[in-house]
Image (cartoon, rainbow, N blue to C red):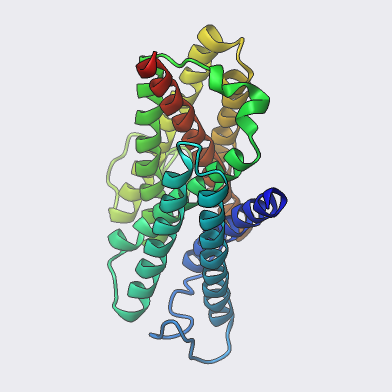
Amino acid sequence: MVKLLKILSILSTLIMVFVLIGGALVTKTDSGMGCGANWPHCEGEISFELFVELSHRVVSALAGFVVLLLSILAWRKIGHIRETKFLAFISIFFLVVQGLIGAAAVLWSQSDFVMALHFGISLISFAAVLLLTLLIFEIDKKFDATSLVIGKKMRIQFISLTIYVLCVVYSGALVRHINSSLACDSWPFCDNNSPLSFEYNFGQWVQMGHRALAGIAFIWTILLLFQIKKHYSHNKVMYQGWKITTFLILLQVIFGAFIIFTLGNLFVALMHALVIALYFGLLCYYLLLSYRSYRFEKDN
């Protein structure tokens, strides 16, 4: 049973990665109506858009089945671990919600502001599955994370940054949904020749707003690295883990810039979506550690 659970958790995590990338691909290739105004069945002429949309639906349906199975088995096998049942519920709940939003977009036209929620909701489901996988593999025991005590100020920072990153993710999804990825043809400013000009159209305002929010997240992550190095350098899971987190946000900024430099290269855009998923997953792991530290502090 344990071996099956481990295999299933890895499979679920990988499938959720494909769901996230597939959703980004659907948006980037404007394939949302590739199957016409039909759901769950698919009708329309054979085309690249139909293939992309249908593939995303199939992968999402498969993800729903596998994650549901993982949630049930994890509930039964490691339900004694405090966070398991919550993560099992969250993973399947948000996966269903993102599927319903996708269906609603096909059957009834939704605004770009509503559709931008789609990626963030999938991200939460992915993070829950990732955390379940870490619990199943007992990663915490290997890194002795149960003995980690995180101060209240640091816990608040982790919580605040995670919520903030969801806002950054939403703004990035909105950029894609309103087709403003290339609204600005320069980086880091919208027009490097006139960096102080603010005569932007709506797409440019959204694009520059996303860049500003992402820039703050980048700086915030680096500042946290210095704080963690000062106070938690002796703890591997805190210090080494946050180094990886910082590296991921750096990659995210680089890929964001290269979307402009490569004129919206599809591979770069998909890597941009993948890296933010990994970054957010690690952030949620630190939320888990913070919660455990809080419980330990409260019980003692």
